[in-house]
Structures are given as structure tokens and as C-alpha cells.
Length: 108
Image (cartoon, rainbow, N blue to C red):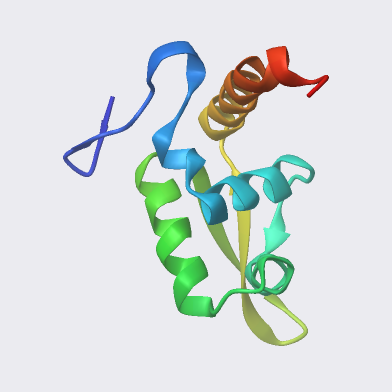
């Protein structure tokens, strides 16, 4: 699959380099637990600047894994983030791949 002219990384056994970057993995984990989350909430939970979060969200959006919705709340324009169906599937596959990697070392 390509997004914005780039090859989007589904690799062997579900391991996904687009999702694997620590902040992007944390974004996906947070969004997987909810239908959507406000940008500022995600920013606070990750402890990153708006520009850092925006950069990671852009990568996930380019891959088709995250969508952003703008809405007015408390008379202010807000940005809400959510995983797409493809994003949820890719995240689950990536988590399964990580579990397979560490699965044999659970007693260590």
C-alpha cells in the first residue's frame, strides 16, 4: 500500500515500523481504548509538545491509520483523533507481533 507516494510498512508477521516508533505506538494504544480523543488530551498523556504530537499524527494519517475531526466545544475549535478501521487492525497486528517476539521470554 502507498500513502502520499510512500510505501507504508506492513512487514512480516504484522510488525509495523510506522506504528513501532515509541510515540506513535503510544498514540495508537491510547486511541485503541476509545472511539476518539481530543488532541490536547493525547498531548498531555504523552507529555510531548503540540508540534511533536502533530508530526507523529501526520505520519499516522499519511499511513491511513488515524483520522482527525474538527469540532467546536466550549466555543473553541477542537481537534479529535481516532484510529481508522485500518489503523485498529494494523495496531492489533503490531501488538500481536510484539507479543510473539517476547512470548518465549515471559519467565525471564
